[in-house]
Length: 427
Ligand code: LLP
Image (cartoon, rainbow, N blue to C red; front, top):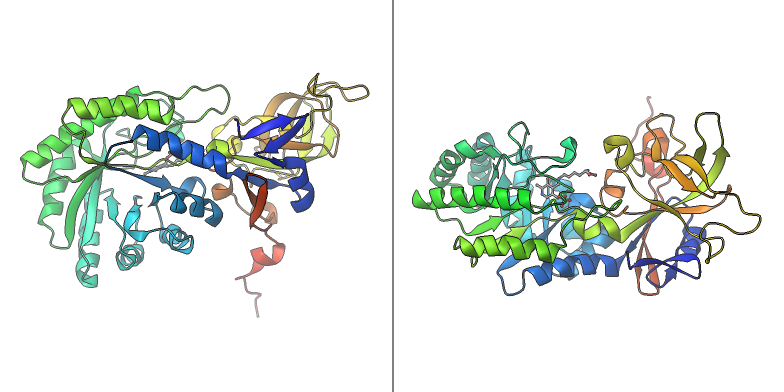
């Protein structure tokens, strides 16, 4: 990642030395590179040059206000999945008209909140939701602009927990029922049909599942329009993967060159397009800094206990995910991780302090370590802080956003008092 690179043996984020940030703010600490986020966004923008397209950042990937501000200022819309996410968009200065609301379980209160804010579109995930949204829209006196999320039944070839477009998943309306759902939506007075959407999964590393899903969606658009219901926009969701450990997903501009060629060939190239990328915009724009607390060599395993844990970095525990772990200082820049008197590289299981065997961050990692060393867990910009918990009453980490040689603290470390706020003692 060009935005996180060693200079004279020290890891930098843009022009800021990460060890300095760790000393100033403590660990665990998330550090994001604004330039890395904008570079990831630029790949999509290049891909859509000359097209009528709107990029809606899927903010579940990282919903910190400072991160949202970067995307809002760059002209992005937002894909939200809760009323809380909508409040975050508005707090960060995002444009409600460019918000789309996804999710299988929107409550009436969330629908009202979104209608009052004037969001751009509801991505409706079931026929039952259409009926409820219609009632809420009629009661509020504001028509709801809707797209129906269709389930194209294609295999994204990713981890089963993050695969969403197969028949057995809870998401979207089945392909066979989609036309009927559109006819119902068009007949409901509180709804205004504006689009169609799909999202087939996450951490997708090939173009083929996207092309297949696109064909299935376009088949439906043809059928729906033949039934007299115009579809203004086509939303192809998110899901493009990143390089965690040598994966080679297509770059966003290359992927979209292929997809746009297919759209053009089928006569949909001038249609308004929307996408909902999350991970690919932020995943490799963030790292998590952590300090080595203890080394615990053993007969079967050598454990390296660090001060970040599954509550900060839940992806290994939840999906057996791989994230690279590297030292902040190479002891000798010419022979990485080795210098005279330094420990030899050993194979470590890097684990956190949480009281669970599932609390591991990396397994069988060759690292030359001493207590007090600082490490960076890479590719930590997406689905880490936004999935962080307070398990073991661990406060959530602080976050810093780097822009050139400037570093801004965008979230202070959470205290125990922060965590107990809102609780009541019995009386
Ligand atoms: N749109 C919808 C409707 C989604 O459900 C998602 C992600 C996205 C867009 C953004 O997908 P992305 O571009 O980030 O792949 N926690 C898991 C990932 C869950 C993804 C859920 N939906 C992980 O850490 O791998």
